[in-house]
Image (cartoon, rainbow, N blue to C red; front, side):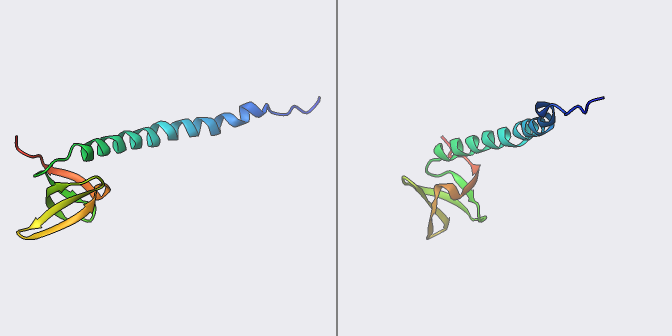
Length: 94
C-alpha cells in the first residue's frame, strides 16, 4: 500500500479558520469602536464636558485644528490633543 500524503490545502484550513474567527471577533469590533470614537471627537464643541485619557475632567473652551483647550478649574486652562479625549460626559445644551 503506498503512503498517502495529506493534501496541503486541507492542512491549511484550521489556520485559515482561526484567522477568520480572530478577524470577526477582534478586528471588526475594534474598527467600529475606533470609528465611533473619531466621530465623537469630530463632533465635540465648545462647552462640552469631557474626560481625557489621563482622567482629567474639563469643559472645552476652544477648539483648534489638532487640540482642544479645556477649562479644568476657575482660571486653569489646559491644551490637550484631540486624541487625548477619552469620552464625553455632558453635551452642550442647545
